[in-house]
Every structure is written in C-alpha cells, then in structure tokens.
Image (cartoon, rainbow, N blue to C red; front, side, top):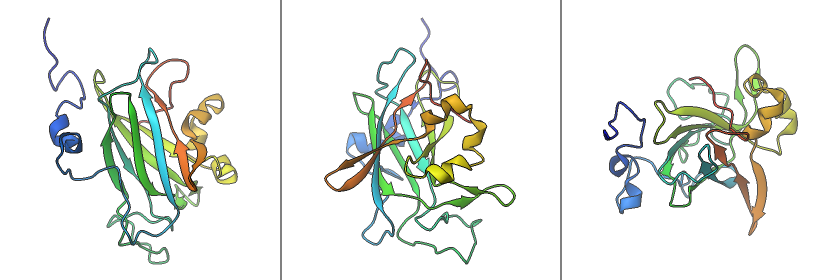
Length: 198
C-alpha cells in the first residue's frame, strides 16, 4: 500500500516544523496570544477536533486570526486611525491537538470589525484547520454566545443555514473567574461544523 505524500493530504505532514512546541522547541506562533500589555478581556478558547466517526483527531493543526479588543487587525491594510491599535497583541496563533484531540488558545475577546459595504461583523475569531486525510485545509469561524444581537446581523454567519449556525457559536463556561469558550470541531457527520470557502 502506498504511503501518504504531501500531495495526498494537507497534513500536518511536517508537524515538527509547524507545531514544534510539542517537541520542546519554539515555533513562529503558539497558543498563547497574550503579553503582559495586551488590552481587553482575557479568554480561553478550548475544544476537541472530531473526525466523521466521532473519534478525536490527535494530530490536527489549528491557526487563528483575529482583531484586537477594539476591533482592529494587526495588519498593514487595517489603517483605520479611528480604531486603537494594540502593540501588545498580534492576533495570530497556532497549535496542534493532543492525543485526545484537544486544543486551546489563550487570547482576548475581539471587537467587532467592518464587513462588506456598511455592515458590521460580530466579534469572531477566524480559524483554519489542517488535518490528515484532508486534501485542503478548511476555514471556519468562532462566534460568541454572549453577542446575540451582533450575531443576528452578522453577514457571514447569515450565510450558514439557520439550523447549522449553532455549530459556529461557542459555549461559554466560567472557570476560576476566567471566561472559557468551548468550541468543538466536527469534520463530518450530523454535527459537522460549518466550513467556508476562502
């Protein structure tokens, strides 16, 4: 039987280089996006990645990208002077899943960002998932359950079928005074998470 090659699976084929923290080394980004000077409400995002049979995926890789607490991205194209930048927050994180398919990110709750036209997007975190057996990585979003009004008018969330939008909304837990948002990802099956085209 032929072995997998990079052209047959999106990976994480090169886990040693992409998520080196699991091997005791420092990578370009980790799962802690916070510094001492980061502004905003500190939160944890945690969850499990499940395959189509409901089994945890032990070697997936996740990347997140988000705005700061004021709703501004740390990107040259986001040059809105009226929205505060945060030098202590860059908004990008990367982690792998553990043997039980678990992952987490320590970050801040993002502010709302502009959408197409004059629309405003609800606070959200963009997430990219890489996993074995997938020919391409997938894109999804994490929305917050305590943003009901903003979620109701979010133009991207509205693209998902109404009966599946809940797969994009995390569940809030409070643990030791810290907000924790649970966001499990199902790659296939009845609970399949909504994924978007790039």
